Picture 1: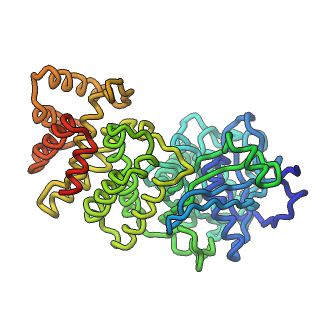
Picture 2: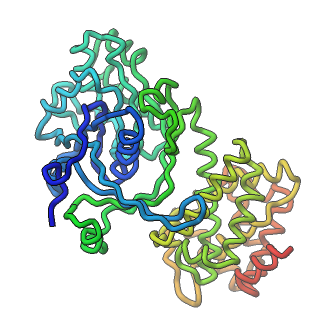
Picture 3: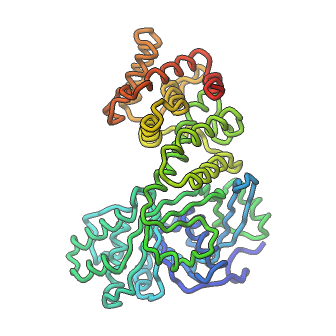
Length: 485
């Protein structure tokens, strides 16, 4: 079979208008996939220069296939139908290893058509390293490398405003654009760069915070040979991802024109504030995951997909999301309902085996950030305890007993919580404390919840009642009764 490259496949090549820090699976199956579609269906015509931001040779450069690779996008569409779409991505022009080709990297700053920068250097990538110097080739930290590049661009174009860029980090941290900008300005101070450059950074450039959402399952190691047979060509850079995607960018309105988004069916939103979308994702997607884990696991289910195959847990999640979480959120109801339907389809994705135990890591903090705000808002608005959230809390306390079917559960959380649950359940099993006392000790941990949740009217009683019933009859029976009620 032929190898995927531009000699064997006649693919369009575009002028470099975008620079991208990071060559990993996520950016290639998310950002570059969207750019490739926009190139095909709009007048964007943007080539991408990918910067390999760290010094390693374990994996070959994308250049060995002339930047070409295949994405396989699989899952359930909006109608619940199974889809598997293959696309040869052709928007990448080159991959530059910055530690071996620093001058080539810096020369990109002289390209007047380059207008957008994306990055994903992992959450640890947006860091400040005080030892970095302007004269390093390159500096170690990603923000320092970016500052070096921006300073060269400023000098080359004599501080022209139209040489400014839109910079869009995709790292999974809150308000990533603001954090990146802050560190870039710290390097300006460290390196004593002139005020004119600082003013140019502030007035001619946009550091945009973003919210990215797509599960990228990466290189399909077990399926690689069979996929290549299906493709009819060799491709060592195949990347797989789920069907759903969402890209929310807190940026200037002209970014929509830069990306040629008019008429696009891509799920890209340019907004003034990403916080409602972040709240929606945390509450609906992450909150549903967090609530599901202890209940489904204690009902002898091991994956998200298996849980959604159960009519009981599908009904539980539907009730939780649509009747207890969505009413507490501020976005338009039709947007919330549409997102929630997408979430349930994502949970059903037959191509992803998402283990409940992998989601369970540090879940006491996840309960605090993902479910407690909705619990409190619901109680404030409705004057009653949301029963499905209460069931999740009861399930969580049961899960942290650390036993399923007489076998130990490998819990992973803070030492404080693990030690506390061990003592509390030991006292409960020895009949030193009641179930109500146990729940009270958990809910009253203001050091964790930042409030005493026993003060939420009725919460301790409902959680205790549900936990007692789970101990006596099992999770499935309790959820069935709650849903029938």
